Structure formats: C-alpha cells, structure tokens
Length: 269
Image (cartoon, helix red, strand yellow):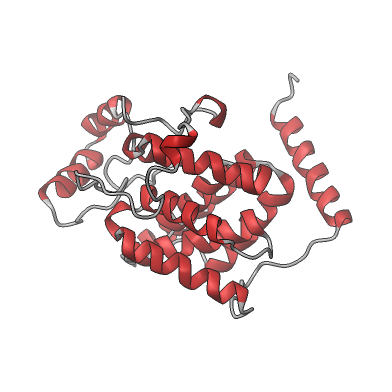
C-alpha cells in the first residue's frame, strides 16, 4: 500500500494532504529499510552471474524474459518502461508527491515521465551515450513533447553502441552510481529548466526524486550534488555542451518530420 507504480499517468498517483507534506523534509526523510537501486548490482555476485547464464540460454532465456516482470534478463538493456516499473516499486507516496509538485512548478517540461527519462538515460545509458547526445535529446524533448520518439531513438543508440563494444570486445565501463545521479540531474536541468535558476524548493524536490531513483547513492550525497549544481547555475559556472537555442522554424520542421515518420509507420491511420 505504501508504494506506487510510475508507469501509470501522473493523474492517478496518490497525493499527500498539505499537513502530511509539511510534516517532514523532502530531502531528509528517514526510511527504515535500505532500498536497493532499480538496477545497481554487483556484476560478480551469484545472482548477477546466474542472470547472465540464464539470459544466454536460448530456450530458458526466452522463458525467463517472457515471465520477467521487470525485464533486464542477462545482459539485456533495461528499456524505459521496465526502468519505470523498477523505480515505481521502490517509490513511497511522499516520493510521488515530489514528482507532482515538481510538475506543478515546472509545467509540462517537469512531467514525471520527462524526469524519469532523464534518469533512465543517465542510469542505463552510462558508458553507451555521450553526454552531448543526452543534452541534445532532452533539450529536443522539452520543445517537441514527443517522448516516444526520444525513447525509441535513445534505445536504438544504446543498442548500437553496445553491439559495437561487443564486436570489439570492449566491455561497457562501470560508471559509479554517484556519477550517474549527477548526469541525471544535469539532464533534468536541461529538459525541465532550460536556463532558469534552481530555486530552493526545486532543490528539495530534486533531492527527493533523485534519492528515489538512486537510493544507494545516499541522501547526503544527493543533497550535495543538487546544492552544488544549483550554486554553479546561479553563478553562471555550469555549461551544458550540446544545449543550444533552436529557432522556431527549426522546431516546426522537426515536428513536421516527426509527424511524417509517425504517419509512415502507421499507414492505416
């Protein structure tokens, strides 16, 4: 009863009353259990090794994928829907309230799906996507509002990068979760803030959301990452390669191209 599933639309997530919201800090809540991150695992652990072996077996791996509620069997990439399910299962009601309030403050670009897409790119795409590619994609999403296109595009990019590394026998580097959380925050800023400052209430909400997605990083470290980022933005010290202003003409052309591709993919419509 205390958890929620973020695969559902934001309109059906439970809300907290005003009194409940102010009864505790969004950044410094205490939780009794230590939550394991949605995808953080020791590659040398028995469970991880078993998952890889199962995924490599043709028949057994197929059955495991069919009956897996969360995907990610073996070395499979975790797609966005599976990522949302894993995060949602670990979220509390107060975590979902932070997503609600963030959207209320930032508008459409602060939608929970947009925030989670940014986290997915940084978490699953670490070592496969270039930072500039992530910035460009989330900046484009802020304008186009076509999250399905961005999801499919990024998944294809990650799959291609992974296949290239496999062919060259160059394993995907193990990026620390702290770095992934920091990159997720940067992507959220580009997508949801544009070039606006990060206000104090935004900091609290960002802290809660990132802690929900990256729980093993720790609340203190997440708070440090968010505070540092906010101060750098305020001082004009934070630059985002790949984030550039796009003219309305270019945006309209991109949207027309996307609409044409969608119509081509659905001839019956």
